[in-house]
Image (tube, rainbow, N blue to C red; front, side, top):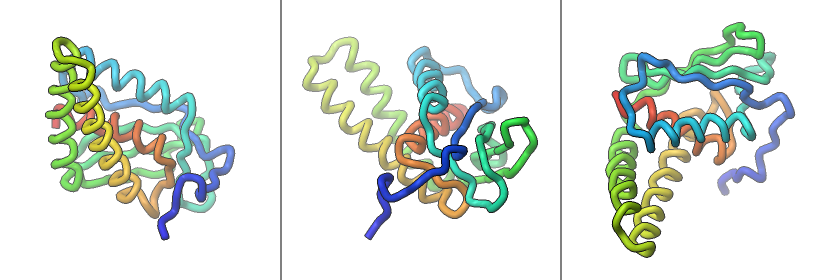
Amino acid sequence: MTETDEDISFPETARLIAVTLDEASLGRDSLEVEHEREVAIFDLLEKNNFDLDVDGQEGPYRLHLSLADNRLVFAISDEDGVPLQQIMLSLSPFRRIVKDYFLICDSYYAAIKTQPASKIEAIDMGRRGLHDEGSHLLMERLKGKVTVDIATARRLFTLLCALHWKG
């Protein structure tokens, strides 16, 4: 039996209060990608569940995401900016999903300009499916380090894609 979001109980302090992306890790993005990144950060800060799986390191937290040596780096600090933990995840398991996600996003952005609603909806369904797959993989890779709910994982996956665009 797998655990669902409803089965996870988060303390009130298990949340992010700030999220930043390493400017050096970001490439030149299209307006659509920049918009998705901004919306993901805004939505993430509005509502999230993010809990370090380390005793004595309660939130709220600040998160700085970057890329280093083919790894996604989660630099987590407390609300005063004191570093708590740095988590590095290999990008290799995400490569296929991110590549496919970028391809389908390109198709989606092209379709919304000229295609009928039924075609756009079909592409969007595929896009959401890949996004969900990437979000679940991110949750799995963070297991034992950070616990997040699926909504938080979805927004973090969007940010991973924003960073990975250049990588």
